[in-house]
Amino acid sequence: MTQGTSVPPDQAADAAGQPERTPALEALYRTFEQQLLIPLWTQIGDLMPPFPEASAVPHRWRWKDLLPAAEQAGELVPVGRGGERRAIALANPGLGGRPFATSTLWAAIQYLNPGEDAPVHRHSQNAFRFVVEGEGVWTVVNGDPVAMRRGDFLPQAGWNWHGHHNRSHHAMAWIDGLDIPFQHYTEATFFEFGTDEVETRETPERSRSERLWGHPGLRPLTHLRPSPATPLLAYRWEYTDRALTEQLALEADGYRVTAEAGHAAVRYTNPTTGDDVLPTLRTEFHRLAPDTGTAGRREVGSSVFQVFDGNGRVTVGESSWTVERGDLFVVPSWQPLSFETGTGMDLFRFTDAPIFERLGLHRSHQDGVTA
Ligand code: GTQ
Ligand code: FE2
Image (cartoon, rainbow, N blue to C red):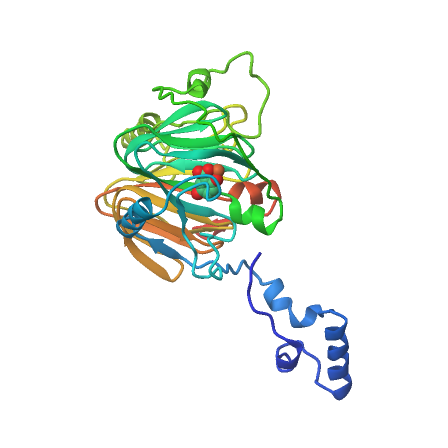
């Protein structure tokens, strides 16, 4: 999936392990070229580097630039069948102008004006929404309207019908995460338009999915079979916030429950398996207490973060930025990541780790220990 440059045979003569460029060898290389053959010995450094060399680069997008651009799109661009969504993707400068945040992950800001409907469709791509501010939109998944509000995480597994409606009197923006690049590169993508009718205008407080599944540690006896994606369509901020608050409070009481000192973290899970919410996407929420720094950590696979609250400094490989509420940044595969904050900082994170874990390709490294 990387797009690094390879050494063409005619420039590889001096490279390590390359044979001397005799006329006979030149002729052989021309034969290879004509027959569409490429020898490994000219490519090995690119194809089989000692550790992952991501094409994607570390990058930060500021919410104060993203939101006005989305608002402009809200004025100029209608939302409807064909274009499907007023979603504007982060395009990693290392990925050749494609709308991909990393080599596997799509991240976009989506914007819906009052009264607007984003039409019903379904696709093989797994998706979620995360809300950094605002409310008033319901995402309707298989006819079940799910309210979206600040701090809520709303997963939506591949091949479920979904549309969104804004039933409030103000516009709303949120972020979408999908595995679009992964499914694009692996050529696994299917898509289907849904009904053009508005499915429902309902705006319930709680979705049917939350009424059935939203009770910690309790599972309906009619639904005991594991499913590969979560049936719970909303993970509300109230619970996430409380879980993080309690971790830090327990730490203060002397219990070792945080990821590291001053660093509380939770993973969103599928209540039918305890695993990640979606087959290809891992999602987490991290809270750094005031005056906290984190140890450098790298792992196979890429991440996208959004700052939910507070501010701080993030270092990813050779890049370092200050970040504040709403800012997004990407961490390419095997790039070390660390944080520092004075005020404290809340961060939402999504990654492609489930893909690599399931294939036995996941590795991480922190404090000199390779796992
Ligand atoms: O809201 O259904 O950002 O299908 C990209 C593709 C959002 C959506 C995106 C999508 C959606
Ligand atoms: Fe969609």
